[in-house]
Length: 153
Image (cartoon, rainbow, N blue to C red; front, side, top):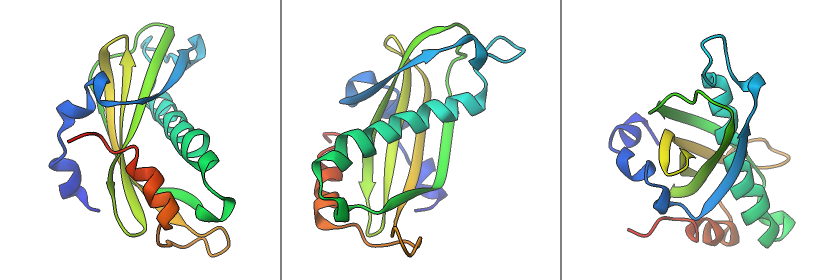
């Protein structure tokens, strides 16, 4: 996947809370705030990682045999910061699958404060073999599990 995928993405769709079915609650802590009193961009990236981890490891991996999935690496990630996160409290990270390729898949994410999207992200993950550490074709069971998390179009 390349940057034309990112530029042609419907970013408004990523900012709609009702377009997600899998959410991860995030508690914003005082230590997440920087000297400007807002959540630092690197912390926002960590929140997104937690959301992906929940979908891939707690939702999908648990329903498949161990040999159906290797590992994952992020090949590309674009984050759009829509509003400052200036307070502690609870956020929700929505995560979904956008596209599925042969050995990679794209995921869309939104971070929400209530119903307001404060950040949206699009990233490409590559499926790698546990031993080879190289890109490997997605197994059919894994592909089917990913398809269940594509948004209704």
